[in-house]
Length: 89
Image (cartoon, rainbow, N blue to C red; front, side):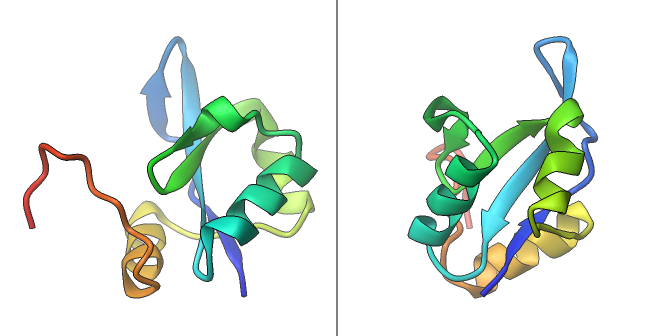
């Protein structure tokens, strides 16, 4: 059971963002996100978008820091990856 976060390297809306995922369940992810005060609207398909100024809060609450490729690998291996409808396997 773990929640992972990648570095805030994703630009959007004038900020840099991280992705927060679980390797167990969406329930675990939602519970963790609620504990750190992430709004429900930050959930997108299979992850939460976390602004760079909240990165340290997530890590301090127990999120494990990993690179973006590792984050996607763990999400995929857990069977929790939900691709955009325009992406192909």
